[in-house]
Length: 592
Image (cartoon, rainbow, N blue to C red; front, side, top):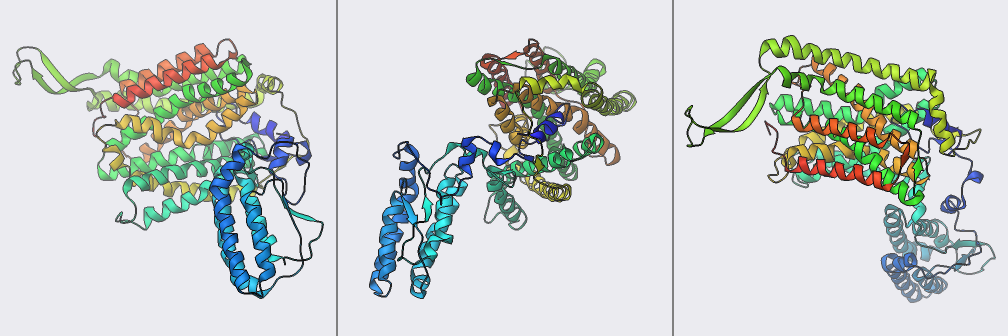
């Protein structure tokens, strides 16, 4: 991945979570043959020794070939009817057979064009090829089909059918290539490119269709949440591009400012909407999303990376020293965040509501069964004189610890992480160029942040029907959908590192996100609440508390020996799924 990869890598450690593997442009000649094939043109006939009858090629015939071929057959008949267009009719007849099975065949170049063809034949086939190109591009793995249709539309159909030359214009062997998940457009992954129109759709139906006449609240919520995925990717690319071209101080400021912008936008929007509507449920949803991000980054991301990496490489080794630093930071983070919760349980008064005795009345005799028990925080002396100062103290100390950690890992003890590069077999490519300039990255970063704010507003506006589902706990919605969807780009990149036998970086991905949640996002929410009171109280329910503490203890135990395999990864993922099941069957929080 070149010199830029080393730069990006050094900024992964300790909370520099927004990184991307394609920030710098690797020289084309240094790439593998598989990647070179993705960007090859169709006007070059290459020697081919494999079979042309493959599963992907057969799928092409079923999805595209038959109806594109039929369109050419119909146009061919139309051209024969006009008599003057007979040469084009013959050309369409040949192309009909070509597009039914184009593999291993080639189309050659011709001379000039005619008006009859441009008026009658070309428009219909332009629609056909445009549709086929769009569908095959969106499917990603059939991008070779998209290239073939695009070149046909822009070049082949504008040439006359006679006077064949010897220069090949169109030659293809395979309709499907599974490696196209690596394909990039100006350094942007093709999936992020294809998901970008979803953002526009989400904003249009969210703000134009106020009465839900064309789309329900559930559809608006789903599209808005899905829009977070590409926007999170673009924000990450912008941060990584600026950091790769800046010094340590600028990189730290950019990461601290924008690194958590995806989640913070949603959290603050939800708290504001809940405060204005008097809906305490949204505050609990925010806490569930915070905890869900923490659990997912501690358990699921390392677990799934260990499983996938272990299945390919049997056993993988990572830098136990740097993993130990990350583990210590996780202990500090979780201990600080949940300190007010433990304090409230130690000194608060347990209050129970909806209590009835065994006889079914409210008399003071007999045993009682209570449905809603909680610690009373309305006591002015306890909350305002003890818990709230503790919250402010913790919210000050955690960012300080974050800054000290940055200095430790990126300045004074950066040699600890040099072992990562050695174990990961990363080689340098000097002269790598960053895809985006600073100003371009900054502009994209600002635009993506504004769009993220709008999508977060649509999400919180239409979340209520989702929360009203009787069979799903609101806790579960918070710890799954709202917590993990923004992290999908990070999960994908972590898996890619694991497949390349660099499990050290995969583990750092999860740890860095978890550290930013505790040391930046939560203190920022407390600071926001201090200036604009939205009722956010840094006290979590028992399930959040014990699930987080247990997860940190477990992952520290797993990381002790500096080795990983698919069994350890399975253990982490299974524990994560057990915790999700607990949230799924948990009673809804108070106020929901």
